[in-house]
Image 1 (tube, rainbow, N blue to C red):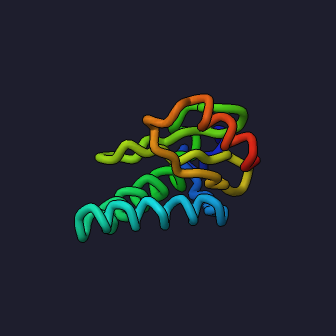
Image 2 (spheres, rainbow, N blue to C red; image 1 turned 90 degrees about the vertical axis):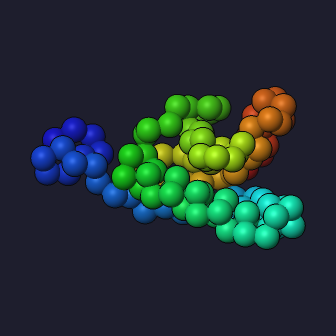
Image 3 (cartoon, one colour; image 1 turned 135 degrees about the horizontal axis):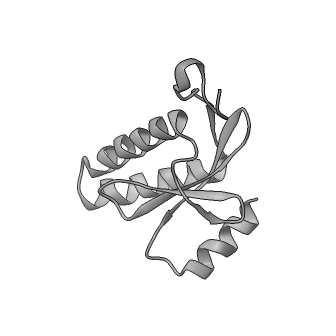
Length: 113
């Protein structure tokens, strides 16, 4: 069997840990979108959840963005989920707006490691 695969080469689902700093990011983004347009925050969270579900099944689908962090783009919104793959789990460390300065994102990821 290949790495990260179960019988018949189907992906193995991994546990996902969303760190408290990433939960704070998610809450702030939700509040921003809800304030801008009621219901939009909920749409963002649903799209985020769909991304997390994909990561659970295919943890290495996203490219490495910085250090060990991979970045999964969130559909319909200009945000990325920054996470680290471990053998038995994934650790979500940040959710950032992707129009931010890339150097700022790298600094933030280094501080969150």
